[in-house]
Image 1 (cartoon, rainbow, N blue to C red):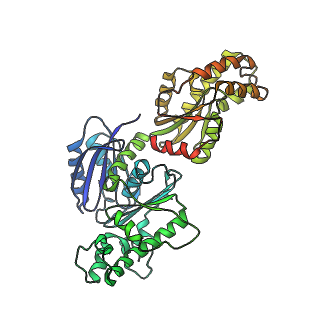
Image 2 (tube, rainbow, N blue to C red):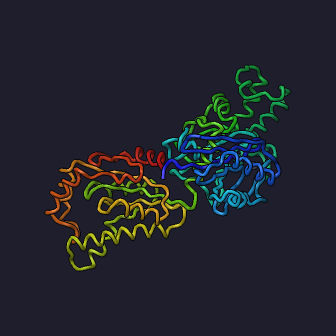
Image 3 (cartoon, rainbow, N blue to C red):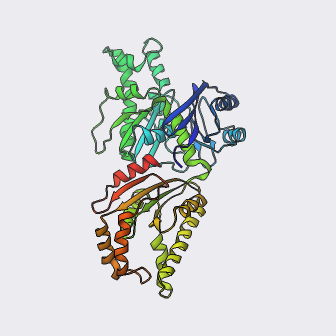
Length: 463
Ligand SMILES: [Zn+2]
C-alpha cells in the first residue's frame, strides 16, 4: 500500500508541469509552456504524460487554477487557463486508462506541504500561493476545508473596497493588490523599471521603493491577519513563485496585535509542491480509496482509550470488535470459548462489510486484537472493503500490567468473555504479540498519558 507511484500534473498560467512521483521523491519530470486554449492544454498534458509514463504508475492527479468541483471532477472557473469548458478528467482517463483526480492547484500544494513540507505534523494550516494570481487552501483538522464546494479561494478576499476590479467579478480582491500581476502594475505606476522584483525593492531604502513595497505587502498582511482570526490555524504557509519574497516583504509590515497569532512561513517544496501534492492526491483519492487506522493490541492493552482519543481528534468513526460483539453476547445464551471465537469472526466480517458499504474517501478507526485471526484474513478483509491507506497503532504495556488490567475488569465484562483462567495465557500472549506487519505501525505505551499530537502527526506522515 505504500510507495506507490503516481503522476502529478500542475497546470499553471505559465508552465504545464508533469512529474512521476514516489512518496516525496520526483523520479522524472516533463514540462511545456501553458496556453489559454483549453484544448491545447489538454493536448500538451497528454504529450507530457506520454514522455514519463511507466507501467508502475497507478493514478494521475491534476492541480488546476480556479474553482474545482472535486465531486463532479470538473473545473468551475478559471483565469488565463480556464478549463471549465472541457472534460479534462474524461479525456486523460480515456487516454491513459488510469484513475484521475483533480483539485485546485493551491490545494495540491498544501497537501504536499502538509505531507512533506512546511506544514508537516500540523493539523490546521492556511496556504496562500502567490504567483501571477493568488491561490489558497485551508486544512482543518487534517482535512481540506471545502465549504459547499470550493472553499479556500483566498485570492478573492476583499481587502481594498475601492480598489481594482478582479476577474472573479468583485472589486479589490487580494489578487488585485498583492499578486505578481499587481506588483507589475504598482511598479509601472511608480515609474520603476519593468521587471523590478520584490527582492530589488527590499534592498532599496528610497521612498518610492518603500511605498511600492508597502502598497503590495500591507493588503497581504491584512488578509493574513483576518484569516488567522477566522481560522485560528497552527500556521500560515506562503508558496508560489513569489512565496519566499512575500514572506520577506511581510517583515516590513508588522502583524497587527490582536487576540490571534500564527507563524507565517515560506513553503519548503517550492515549485514542486504542486506536482508532489497532485501525485499524492491521486494515490489517496484513486478509485475511491478508503482509510483504516488499525488500533491493535492484545486484550486489555489500552486500545479503546487510544481509539476514542483519535476519534475525538479526527471525527472518524470507531468500529470496535468488542462493541459489535457485545449486544450478541448479551442477547444470546452463555456459550463456550469456541462460541466467543465464532462471534469474533462474524464481528470481524461485519467491520469489513461496513467499511465496504461506506462511500469513497471514508476513514475508519478499527479497534480490535487483530492477532486472533491469521493476517491473511485481515488483508483480504481490507482489500474487500476498498481500503488503500492503512496504518497501525500498536498498543502495549508490560505483560503483568495487562494481566492485572484484565483481572480487574472481569466483574464488569459480559459472561461470554473468558474469565480469570485466561489471565496467565494473556500474560504470555502479551509477551509475544506483534503488530500485523501489513501497514506502518507506531508503538504506543499505554501506561503513560497519550501523546495525541505525536499520533496524529505520525498518521499525517504515513497515510
Ligand atoms: Zn476576486
